[in-house]
Length: 498
Image (cartoon, rainbow, N blue to C red):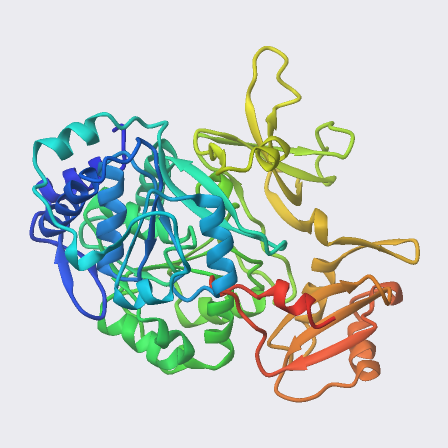
């Protein structure tokens, strides 16, 4: 295969009437998904956009949005999913960097968009003859062309457009389908927004094998009991969720009340998954496959995988696994040498799924995507993740935190992830985030807990796990930690509360 639309073409040929996508308004089969995508592609071709010109998609998480994704890729144009609920400032910054060829939206979205120097197209008015012109455009798309651009800001709050090629998506989709035994009878329950690359797992791994994707209504994630009942009703067999959603579901006891006989595979990524809540899931769903995936957006969703194959105590860390096929990882010390087993270093990734760089951001591209310093024979692109890991004697990788979350306090080097991990072991703590207050030189711990906690009493308990120099100097108790649009803990917002 040379491009992602071939996944849809083959699925439509093999399983024309099998459901491909379901949202809260419609269910669409593979043949109809192909027909609608090609029709929108024909309308996009009439715009005469330059090849590889991005198409911004400002639509709710829906079947219609996926139609536009495929339509853009048929034309050789990368699609760019925008967060439909993003604040105005974020949208402006993204569009200013992107400079799209057009924006596809609906009536509500058009009213919310800031002024844009490109055509704004309403999805209901896009239709054309998806015939030979679409075939010619698709045949010209190579595996090195951009498939999508995903905007991510990480801990900085500044959006960067990560350019992912078709080859990365094809490779990832094939690996997911094989690793988790997806087939035409599988049903995946999509949690993430399309502006978050976890959605690539559901959309294209399903297309690779003719599976069905159920787009879970966003409101259900506020009500874990109803959410699990929805999974049971839709006979969902596989989920790929961020740990925050799994943590809240485990904490509220919903897994004790709802049976999920069809759910075979539970995959998670995007944050550290604490074993305390993972064990709740594993006890509720014995004999199922649980997997911890790791990877930044720049490596096409994930680059390592750990299938949970043994019991872990609640306070234990969880490994991130081994590099998956067609990917290679290096663990490099600060001096550039390879870290020995047990030694911590920066995780650097090589392989077929690396991003092409950052859109309209050559400075950041040069900084993050470098040549492998251990290959003197030829240039070999490598992505520096900024994540700290270690390998054990068996080569298993363990996440140790972020380079930018490693602090020095009164001469002591501290990894804030270690503070968070210890705090989760304190009874009554549902979730936690640790930040460093530079001005006051102290660690601030944000706790998700049902009641106020005194700092001195909390530190007495935390002191069972941590030395004194790692104890927080301030506690902030909250009923719920704030989440960003990807349902991860919103550390950018928390930083404004220091």
